[in-house]
Image (cartoon, rainbow, N blue to C red):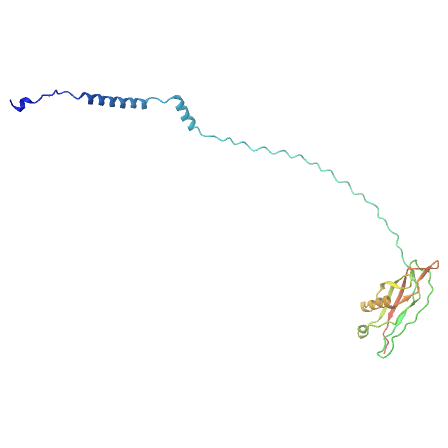
Length: 218
């Protein structure tokens, strides 16, 4: 017997296992496709819609300014004009005081000693009296001699209870400040007065003293 006759003839039908596996795979793919194509659930759709809502910020309008109350200004009171008060003017009446005269000293001569007048207090205003005094020799300033200065200085001297001059005021200038200053300083430094008295007691008083600076004509 030949080998061809001994071959087993198999049936011509497909493999059942492969057919079943292929069918199962197709069914799974169809199920997945259908699941993806179905409509979304209501809860999931509402969540997506809320995510798309934009946040809107409401801007409040600025507050209105408070009304400013009207300020009523009261008129100022009218000034009261007071009538001027005229103070009484006290006019001094002076008596002619004694004059102290000095002349230009020579280079080799002693200083000139002026005479010391003794004057009784005349009837003058209170506080202004004429007093006896002792004067030191007047010194003529060297600069005044060189510049030929001369003139009379009228001084008002405040004399205390001991007869000492404590203040000197220039009432009338000689026209030269140098002579005025020299006369004031010399009276304060070396002059003495007889103090004024009231009811037998020495009191402080003002006295007028003229000091004359005169150049001797050569």
